[in-house]
Length: 110
Image (cartoon, rainbow, N blue to C red):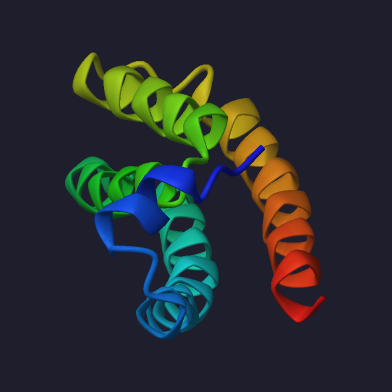
């Protein structure tokens, strides 16, 4: 589950800045999720780690700690050249991130 409290605090409760930041988040994260899956399909470890780093930062920014932890597991498996779990981790990441993004968008629209 996301938590925008720390981000709001960091931004001085500036809702306009928060909305602009979240627009960038919603524009970039789905593309990064697509790219990390494609990188996995061609077994490009360096690209997976690079994209995972960006995703982890994005998820932590909006308080999506569970998703950031999934990303960390993906990074760790890549660094250990262990692809056996990455497919399942990516599936979990895609499913959970889709739900989180929808939930966050609904809150912002209300």
